[in-house]
Amino acid sequence: MKKTVEGTGTPACWDPEALYLKAQRYVQHMSALDSDDWEYALWSGFALEFLARSALANVSPALLADTDKSWASLYHALGFTPTEEKFSPKSIAISEVFKRLSAIYPIFTKEQENFSILHTARRNAELHTGEPAFDGFKGSDWQPRFYQTCETLVATMGMTLKDFVGKNEAAVAAKLIAAAADESAKAVKGEVAAHSKVWLAKGEKERITLGTKASVWATRQDGHRVDCPACKSQALVVGDPASAPSKKLSEDDEITETQEYLPNRFECVACGLKIAGLSRLTVVGIGDRYKKTMVYDAADYYAPPDNEYEGYEDDNNEP
Image (cartoon, rainbow, N blue to C red; front, side):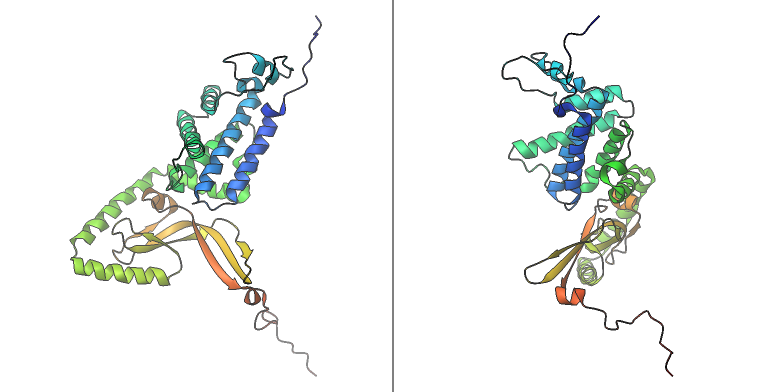
């Protein structure tokens, strides 16, 4: 039997590699933004959609074609050229993409499907309505599930999260995922409640004095200021770098150096609460990444050290 109609190959609009590269472009743009910025969350929605479409197209590009009104899109996805007038290929809705992935891949769980549908719906609300859908959307509420979902999707294509987001971001993502999965960390809520009870038992005058002291202390110490989950006084979280520092030179010859940190310790000197571990910090809502910003004068930044021979041994070769 001889075929009389030959296809021309998968069109770019449904090519799994093209879709993956677009998802990777979006996640790279996302990573260049501040992790607490609403745009960071917005671009994550773009990246998630195209990564999911790539994973489904990797099974078959035909699974992305919309067949509700005609078969022309399916025909096109199979590599043929439709004869329909004013033809424009149409894809299925992103919610349907997630449903199909869940049915095809057992590792793409119902929880991940639900998260993906809600996350992309929030993105659509941001784009198509007057609602600022990502304002106040804390990273600790969505980033662990986002990275876990991405990890599953790239696994269906024989890749790792490191391939998709890079080595540094994958290392941060692993810590976020582990922290979210740590059930034992929920015990910290009892510690917070106990400190809150002791705090409320103090007199108002004492609470004001301690709160003022804590505010001064938090301003002078190195770290990121947050509200204590027990007493609401100014407190600090400190952590380890989560990214390389970025530098910007202003017109005033000042260099602004910004670096993201992932918190791992908390302390409040007002009520005495101390918390260690990202997972425990995440449970009480203070586990988000934070930025440390330093401003330098360009001349001082690039000036040689006071002793340019520092680190060298003394020259003892005098006659």
